[in-house]
Length: 237
Image (cartoon, rainbow, N blue to C red; front, side):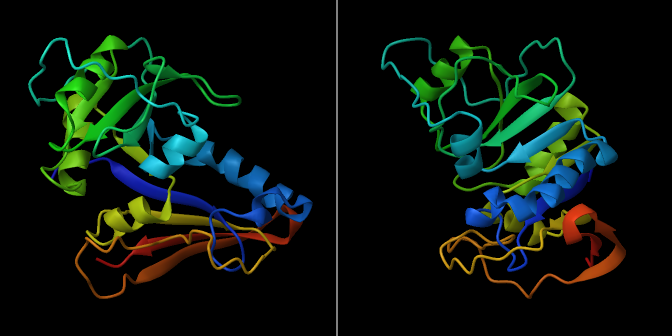
């Protein structure tokens, strides 16, 4: 199957969490800064996030304003024009995220074109909403996300050769359970908060089938600033 090289790159606490109080603790700052710098090491053209991560950190809780009247668009992939070759891939199966532009410009990161990943459960009104902002979108599944199809379309429609997956835990596991991660990169801060409600690196949705635990081979280990550790793994397929 044609697909990009996929790296899952995450910043975690010692207890395997990817959100929570540890992220803003001063003792985690050096490792967090290293995590940010290592994004450049992988030189990916696109970064993919799940719905929850996108809502909290990128669309900032903006709710879409949908209109019942308007053009009815077919449920077919749409590749919008773009003046950049850098992408934010937003997994939004049911179409709940709000937007005000087809580009994201975040501090410290290059301008990125948004690609919405949808399923056929999305409404016609939401497709019209995306067209209002000329946002690209692809369909990857009927009722639930088809990760293999998603990767194939990113490769063939957008010519993305290297993709970074950066959370949350549910989207990370969706790709891991289908053996679609080529490398796992973990920058671990020397901090733990013991919060049982925080999200971990991998979390399986109840709707996904059970599978045997994913196993990884250690590729490299490196000590980083502030007593952190950078671990690189290859998924055993």
